[in-house]
Length: 307
Length: 182
Picture (tube, rainbow over the protein chains, first blue to last red):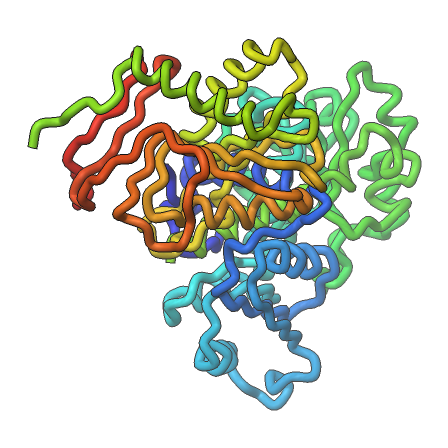
C-alpha cells in the first residue's frame, strides 16, 4: 500500500519517482472508471474542494472540476474577476476566509510564481498547484508523462523534446523534472531568447535547429507562444517564429521516423503548430486532455487520503 | 495464543464443492446468473467456485466478473494510507441478472456494503446473494448476512481469520491467528 510523500502537490520537483508511479497507477484505475456508463465513485463525498483561479483557464479548470465531481467531492469555484481581490484583498486573506468555511482542499492557479508554495507555508489544507506563473504546472506534467507512457509503454530511455517558449513555460517547468525522474532524456528547442540561460544545469540539452531536434526525439511537446507573458519582444514577429520554429506536416514528413506530437493547449494554429499536424494521427493532444481528468482524480484521491 | 487451523486443503475442497452444489440447487443452469468476486481476496475463492461450477455443469460460459471496491469504502479517510485499487473486470451487464457476490471472510460487513454500492454502478441486478467462505458472525457492524456460508467461526475481535490459497501462499488453508494490528 502506497502513499504520497507529499501533503501538497506544488511541483514535480518535490515528488519522488515512486510518487509519480503511484499517481500513474491510480490514474489507470480512474481511467477505467471514466469508460463506464456511470463515471462516478463516492470516494471524496465528505470533502469540499475550492478551485481558486486567479488567472484564466478553460481546460485545467474544467478538468479539475470534472475530476472532483467524478469523485463526489463538493466544489466551489472562485475566479479573481468579480471577487474581493479587486477590492485589494490579499491572497492569504482570501484563502483564509474560504478555509474558514470548512474547505478541505485548495486547487489554485495564480499568475505569480511561487504562490502555491507561499500558501502551503501558511495554511494546513492540502494544496494542488494548477499552474503558478512561469514556475510549475504539476498536473500537466503528470498527464503529459502519463499520455506518453500510455502511447510508448514506458518513459525510460525515451527522447523527449520540448519546443518553443521554454523561458515562460510552467509546462516545461514540470515536464523537465518529470521526464528526467522517470529516466527519459530531455532536449529543448526554441529561439535562444526564449530559452533560459544555464538550462543545461537541469540536465537537459539545447538544440537551436528545429529539424535536428526533431530527428533526435521520439516525442515532441510543442509549447504555446505565450503572448500574455511577453512584455518585451523576444521574437521579431509571430510570422518569423512560425517560419523557424513552427511544426508542420512537411517538416515531419521529411524526418524518417514517426514522432508523437503533443501540445498543452490552447493552440495558436499556424504559429507553433499547423492544423495539418494538430489534427493528424501523430498528435495525441486530445488524449492528453482525456487523461487529464484521470490524472487529476488520482492526485486528488491520493492527497485526500493522506490528509 | 496458538494459531489453529480450521480448514485444511482437503476440507476446503469439500467445502467449495458443497457450496457449488448449493448454488446449483438455487440457480439451476446459471442461464441468468453471474458470479462476482470481490477484489482482492474474494477473487481467489470466486475463481475456484467458477472453475468447479463449470466442471459440474460442463459449461464454459458461466458469467464471472471481478469487482474492486476501493473507491467505495467508508473508511477511506480513517486509514493512515490511501488504499490502492485493483482491477475491476465486469464484461457483462448486471441488469436483470441474479448475482452471487463472493468474498472470503464476512466480518464487519463493511466490505460487502461497499461492494453493493460499487455493483449498482454496473446496472441493476434482479437479486444479489452473498457467498462467503468464513462467516465471523459475532463481529458484524451492519445488518448483512450471507446466504451461502462455508464455515461459521465464533472468534473474538483480537483474532484474525487468515485464508491462504495455493496460488499466492503456497497451500490452501484457513486458520485463526492473533491480530497483530490490535
